[in-house]
Image (tube, rainbow, N blue to C red):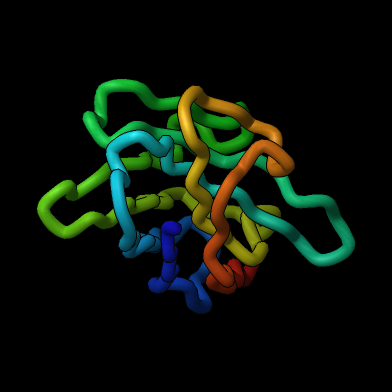
Length: 123
């Protein structure tokens, strides 16, 4: 069993930055890839970024490439999503997820989910 708790969401102006955190707990975390998804109002949940605990293997959605950075702090069992140059279209609930094994951008492939944290970007 893996527990995930997101934090760091809030209100930010367009062009600003925000860092989300996902605290993970449970057994054998190292076998899981950690992923961020987001869901905007009225839209389907979409993949944002993915990383393994070694930190050497990352994937990004095209919409955030070059603006968002995913990273891990293994000592704290925490995954971060540093978001910069934020746009109004980045407004969404951001979810942390854990996926056993290989990278997937499909939300139905995730094994565990956090409850999400709301990011609102004002224009």
